Length: 316
Image 1: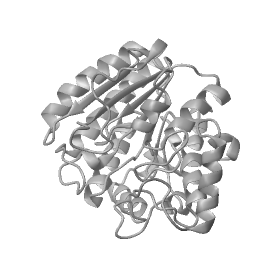
Image 2 (image 1 turned 90 degrees about the vertical axis):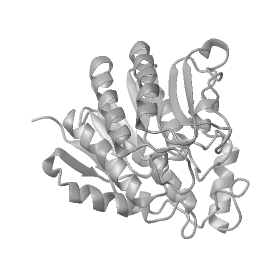
Image 3 (image 1 turned 180 degrees about the horizontal axis):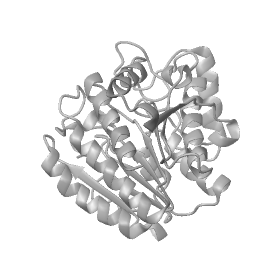
């Protein structure tokens, strides 16, 4: 029997959010897990509990001054960690650390041979930079995971694939000059959506020139547009021959999201996940961690993330 797909759940990551009326509310974890349970995957998935990242883990990507700032403001429970998108909620330091811890736990499980695919719903916080919060993101779990794979597991060439409607600026600029962090990011054109970055001309700097692929999409782009863009991503990742794939599958790119303008269906997420499993099987022993990312229409995120898990299961 093939290994089960690991799916992370627990109050630790469910507590990451900012309450009503903030788009990133505390109900997103439960909405997804309810849908996943209805899908009835049985023994094909195995639930796993998140842990907390240590300060040393966070320091792999973030600066000490920024970590201290989050800790202090989390204790105070007032104000914003950025210019007004990311509230400094009481306890947000522990919740954000648990998101990182869950993604690192998924990485460890895969590297230790306990699974080939894993999914962490409340994760993929791709806007957080090395020294700042941004766009609802406090600590960048994918950034920490990339550095952790290198330090803890000795990997070098890692691919980060992002289909969230928003450009993953924290990842892009965090590794802009890093030739071994391969990025492929399909997102709504920054002329129409936060954070305003991710132009096609942004391909990496210095020795990393050409190791980053940004594909901005026009508002209203649908599944056929996504498939054309995805063909470029698939060829790009195939050519890169990564040792591990991190997949940020934000569901805010689906039609009906309240804060974005793309019009994909959940099939886009299913197809992307299937393709990444195929590429991972070809190049890196099947190693893929999926992270939920954005998504503010609850039905959309529940269905899109469940389809990602379904694709992981089918490819196991």
